[in-house]
Length: 108
Image 1 (tube, rainbow, N blue to C red):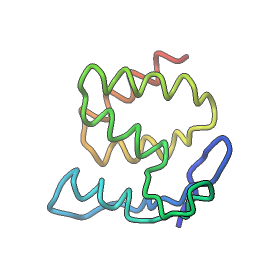
Image 2 (cartoon, one colour):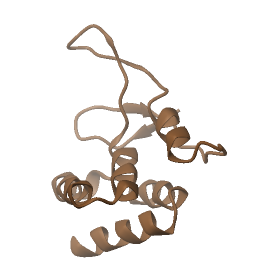
Image 3 (cartoon, rainbow, N blue to C red):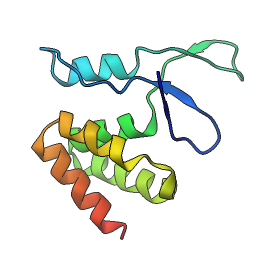
């Protein structure tokens, strides 16, 4: 299990390359496949780390998705694992990788 960079907590997340025929659905199901115990609720919670969230947002590519990604990138500052994020975006294809590149260029 690889730990995602988070401001206040470590979130379990699987980042291995995916070899599925399901495309993004396979990626999403893998991204949320690791449950984590919710300390505040006492229940099992399924979630994705910030890097997976951003990769899925740039893959979706709609105006609101891109704006959501832009806000997360701006808020997160240097706590995002950029190498991981780029690897994940490439797995979603050239368009997602290009969109991510444009967003990251904006923050410079």
